Length: 264
Image 1 (tube, rainbow, N blue to C red):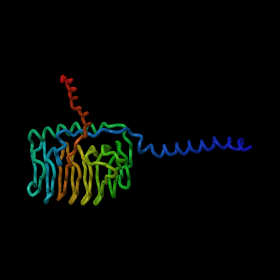
Image 2 (image 1 turned 45 degrees about the vertical axis):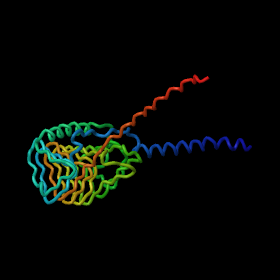
Image 3 (image 1 turned 45 degrees about the horizontal axis):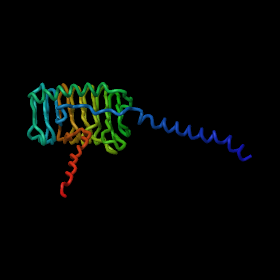
């Protein structure tokens, strides 16, 4: 009797586990369905905190850590009093032209990344895992959190079919090992970063990029065809390196065995 009671229940127990497991997989799919993405290669544009196609215009005293460049335009207004540290100004020279050429390649690379997950255009209040995300006019009020899940090489790519506009005091937060070096914003039109906000990642806009007063950028503002406009902002292009697999150490040569003794 004990055995007959046990057998009918066993399949139900196993089924319950299977359903729970399936439900768990369904919950996890939005976060893990995408394959890992390689970072977008910026080439020589990686050293630029600010790069514009037409003009760079500054009001008050922004601080830029990294190179500042413009090409094919040649107008840089407001430096000084603007401050450039850890970098050089390149105005319509060969270096700025090469950076713009590399930016076009990077922009097209980001625009073509697949598969892309469509997300609400309002980014505030979301926590996102690594992957490629697409939307129309991206907006950000409040806080967006990017969770690398403990993987410092995790890549986040955002593809906007129109503009990127962030509100005042908005924030992009990185957690669990996420790096600003691996966050990319491909903007098909213009980007506007709100006053006293904190933004993370490399913005690659087709036209203009405007930073309102007191904005802080951990990353880069790179405009292909238009202008970059700043008002008392801070932009830091964090140096980014690609980790390499360490070479296999070469063992030292084995010393020859001692010669046999010839002593009597």
